[in-house]
Length: 307
Image 1 (tube, rainbow, N blue to C red):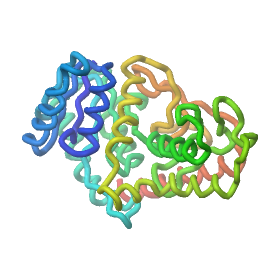
Image 2 (image 1 turned 120 degrees about the horizontal axis):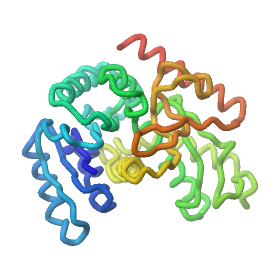
Image 3 (image 1 turned 120 degrees about the vertical axis):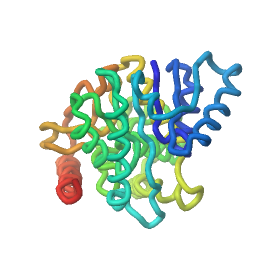
Image 4 (image 1 turned 90 degrees about the vertical axis):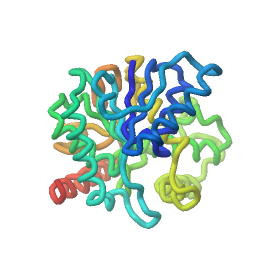
């Protein structure tokens, strides 16, 4: 499998490239950036470590590299400021994103390509990509709340002193201020969280708050996330490459699940080689479903204003 990363010279794109390299699952990793020297340098840096990792082809290049890519991962975009919501990025990023989509259409792509949007505001840009590229909706996915979910799990594991891999809890909805913590389905090693020894409701709510604001915390402390978003991106791409049919909270175009229509938003989604294969609807607390629908309304309102 070949993955082309548009924005591969930047922090997020290069961290995604490194995560894909260490994973050893995809065969080709192409880093594309408006600063071609930077992309070439990042690719060369990765290539230098290849003898200690996996036999892969890693290189820089131009947008021409998307022609034969199986996955086009778009990470390029302007960064969020510490006091700026992700949705505030729209007016600064939509024009840039449209130009990237135009480049992809001009160069051409494989019929079964998966477009994987990471750039923020990811839900709006995923919707835009689905609308403008003319691909089947299932072939356009956004990172959505995958990173938020990963952060949520990590912070909860740290607080309860349990293995992070055994914590299961999701963030759904918008990748932003209106995201929804799905406490009703939270588990540790398959055991209900609300039965776990020493669980304190106030502490749990504090963890949720920190998970929600982790993006701003990363920007304040180190200019933005890199490692965690890199492995989150690779996790989804590996599910595509391996046709894993794992459930991920990726952002995709909705047509009725949870009462959501004509908006790209994160709900539990089966991910495989053909992209978003199925949306999974489960029972949740009424307040969670209401919050999820409100999150969809926030995004729908924004779409109507800016697209």
